Structure formats: C-alpha cells, structure tokens
Length: 73
Image 1 (tube, rainbow, N blue to C red):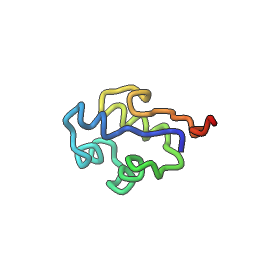
Image 2 (cartoon, helix red, strand yellow; image 1 turned 180 degrees about the horizontal axis):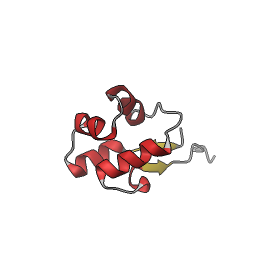
Image 3 (cartoon, one colour; image 1 turned 45 degrees about the vertical axis):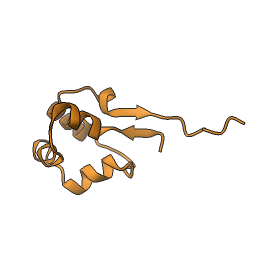
C-alpha cells in the first residue's frame, strides 16, 4: 500500500506504549497492530483524530505516502 502509518515513530518520540495508546484512543490492540503492520485498508477520521490527540501530533506526522511505482527502467 502506498500510504504508510508510522505510529511506532510517534510512540517512540512520545515515550508511550502501545497499550497506553489503545487506552487513550479507545481501539483494540489488534486494530493498532493492523495499522502498524500496513494491513489497514482504511482508517476513520475520528480514529485518526483520536490518535493525533493522544500523541499530540498532526496527521502528517504519522501518515506517509510512498509511490508504489518503483520500476523506472
């Protein structure tokens, strides 16, 4: 997928555990794992907002776009 969710980076910067994030955001550990490992097909804006609130960051701090077109030759 071309959209990467870098929750690990912000968790490390904020010195917050995944467990603490799940408690603050109100989502399951399984759903955080899905976001972290790139298996998510979608994320609700309300969930993104809650993650940003919990981590005191902007969406762009955890969302990254990478082109899937790596074959230029």
